[in-house]
Structure formats: C-alpha cells, structure tokens
Amino acid sequence: MLNKDVKIINVGIADIQGGQSPSVIRTTLGSCIGVVFYSPEKKVGAMAHIMLAKDPSGKDSSKNPHKYAETALPELVKRMTELGCSKGEYFARLFGGASMFKGMNSSFLQNIGDLNVNVAKEFLDKEKITLLVEDVGGHEGRTISLYLDDGRILLKKGGFEKYLYKVR
Amino acid sequence: MKEKIDQLFENEAQLPKISSVVSKVMEMVGKPDVVIADLAKEISKDPGLTAAVIKLSNSAYFRPAKPVKTVQESLMTLGIKTVKEIILLNETKGILKKELKGYQVDGEANWMHSLIVAELAKRIAVQKKLKVDKDVVFTAGLLHNIGKVILADFFPTVLMQFRTELQSYQGPYTDLEAKFFGYTHQETGAKLLEKWNFPQELVEVARYYSEPEKATQFPELVSIIHIANCIVLLGGMGIDIGGLKIPLSPKALQNIGVTEGDLQMYYTLLPEMVKHIEELISV
Image (cartoon, rainbow over all chains, first blue to last red):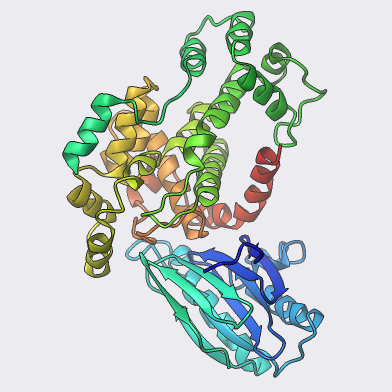
C-alpha cells in the first residue's frame, strides 16, 4: 500500500529520473525499454525510458540524448553518480521491448524492442553492471514501479501484476 | 452483460453527457453559413465554457499573435474550426480523464493517450497532404476509444475470468470484449457518439479504428487514426490490459501511403509531441 506522503516520480517517454527512499519511480513501456539501477545500501535508484537503440539520423541524439540507448545509458550512470553511488554499488534490471507488428513488412517497427534490449545488455556487459532481472519482449505493454525503500519492482502486464524482490 | 449495456443506452441518464451549448455549437459549425457573432453569442451562454475558450486560446499551443480577451476575438484569431476543437477538448476532458480500472489505465494516461493520438493524427494528415479536414482529424483522434469509458464500468464483475482467458487467448483482443460484454468498446463508442448526434466520420472512426479494413465511408480518416493509435501505444502511452495486441494494418498504411520511413519518423516524434501537448493542458 502506498503511503500518502510517498512521492511518485513519473518517467516520461525519452526521460531519465532518479530519486531516493521512500519515493516510487514509475513508467509505462511498449517497445521502449526501461532500464532500472538501484543501490540496496543507499536506497537510491534511477530509471531510463529509452525509445531506440541508436539515433537513425545521427543528428537528434545531441539534442535528445535520453531517447537513444547509446546516449541515455551513460546519462543513467551519471545520474547514479550524482545520487552518490559509484559502480559496483548498484545493480540493473531491464523491462519492456515488446513488439506488436509481427508478420508485417516493417523491419524497423518489428525490431525496435529487440534492438533496444540487445544494446542495453551490451552496455551493461561492457560497463560490468550486473543484470539481475529482466522481463522483456512479447506483445504486452508493461508498467513498472520501483519502490526505493527496498528496491522491489511492481510489474503490471497483460492484466496481471507481481512484485519482483531481487535487488542484489 | 449485453442487456445491461442495452439498458444503459435506452435510459441515457447514466451515460456520459455533453452540454446543450456544446451540441448546439457542434451543429452550428457544421453548417456552411455560420456567423461568428451568433456562434460567440451561443458560446457565451455558458460562462465556464467561455472562460475555458479564452484561456485555452491563449495557451502556448495555439500561440495567438496577440492576447485573446473575448470569445469573438478567439473565433476571429484562431478560426471557427480551431475554437470547435478547443470546445470539444474542454468538454471531453472530464469524460476521458477517467481511470479505466478494468483496462488498467489511469485517468491521466488515458487523457494523454487521447490527446497524443489526436495530435499525431493531425500531423500525419498534414505531412501526407491528405484531403481531410485537419480539425475533424484531431477530434476523431480525441474520441476514438471513448467506448472504453463505458465498458470500464462493467469490468469489475468479469475481471478475474477476463484476465485468465486473456493469458491463453490468441485472437484479436476485442473479440474477448464482445464475448464478455456483448459489445466491443468500438461498438460502444460508436453508439455513444451517435447518441450525441456527432458527425458520421467520428462514429465510423470509433467503430473501426482497430480494424480499418472494414471502414467503408471514411477509410482515409479511419486509417490515419488507426496508425496514430498504434504508434502511440508502441510508445507506451495508454497501453491497456490487452497490451500491444492490435496489429498494425497493412491496408491502412496503403490507404494513406505511409512508408517505413514515415513510421520511423512518427515514432521518433513522440517525445516532442508530448511536450507540445503538455503546453496545451498546462493552462
């Protein structure tokens, strides 16, 4: 149950937000991915809502870095640093990347989700940030809420909801 | 369930309503010989509506050249059709900004979804240089899924079973609505707009926006809204219990000549459109 005093921080599309206990950070994802970093020791975390793996034009990412994984993920790391966490203190979880256009002739739209997931995983691998939990792909949209008091995530998908407690 | 929904439409008392001033304005702007002074007079009968028109006309979204102080000035500066758009926006806010509990969509998200679909649809119409009225496109986008507001009230009693069946269900999501409620939300929305005496274009969009192949009278308009809705859902805005189970119709793309590159652009534009719409609703 949510206490009235708990602040809900909404993460918009192509947006990054961070916060500390007892706030809750929330977003809704379709093909976009939600990358979540959380430090169980310091009870702080941040979330990125990323639309695309790379900037197709090459011109937009300097103006809108949070749209694209290649520019948003370094920003997310920076946000954790600003929140007082160095690498090794926080762990990652990954959500979203659904696809809706099976069987149609748009390789772009069909693959957005998968590409997003792949690029995010490559980044985590390269930066040695441990990926603890993922719920990606399929045809369902997802709403995720990160409870910063203990790091649990409420995942809502296709009419069902469940808590994910693994934080380290 | 079907009988209950039929009863609702017979009784009307519990259906979402629009004010008599708004119906009158809708009727007046539909005529070719509408006089601005008459329209201003009609709108001014409703003080709340008058205030809203002036306030919204001055928003960053519409950017009037100089501040608008009266309804008459608003009609002259922005044009009759834009003011109609403003009036409908104001009127439907209370109806669309409602939590769709069974669908798992909160009020703010539903309202934002409707507005972004409206905005993207308008941009598609402009970019593809289609011969459809841009303001009708906006309104059609705004009202496309209004039927959900009604079906949401009937959800609680069927929810558990609905969810269980949804897990293993492979067919179109709206078939499940038809099975559980006797109507799809599209049929329900179309019925409501007919009750309101809204133009046939809007009724057809509500009825067929997720199956644009079936549109017979206004296939272009229905296709625009279909595509806009799919793109906005893809961006996560207004995703409901059905997830992303509405497939994007190749026929709709063909109807208005939308290419792969266009789809990519529409999707990439979403954050910018959200900012634009936030300017509209922040007033």
